[in-house]
View 1 (spheres, rainbow, N blue to C red):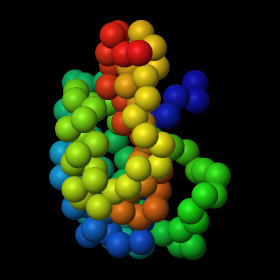
View 2 (view 1 turned 90 degrees about the vertical axis):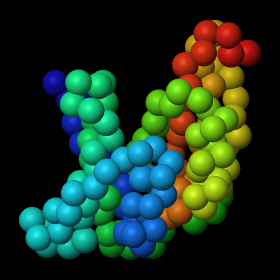
View 3 (view 1 turned 180 degrees about the vertical axis):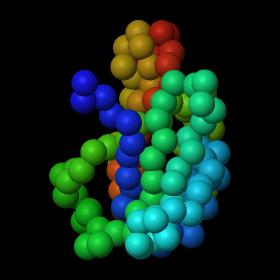
Length: 131
């Protein structure tokens, strides 16, 4: 087994993070704070019949990752229909470039960004013409 079934994104500012992920990827949120005993919002990333998983935003319990530090957790990569539009939305919502768009030749466009909470996220647009 061992299939990923849930993710958690650690955040400093819950409302700012909800706005970022809601605006950029269209995610919706469910308040599970009473259940978790801390600020914790379930994340719905898409329709049940679509491939993918749901997760949560959790209040960060320590320091955020620093600049130029290696990744100290899992990186979530979101599939997108239009890379350039998604990048534009990320930047407009306060994200920054971590690793610019590059081609996975014959497969896709890929890139990495810092969200508003200092986490690294990826976006991936399938495109067999990428080079």
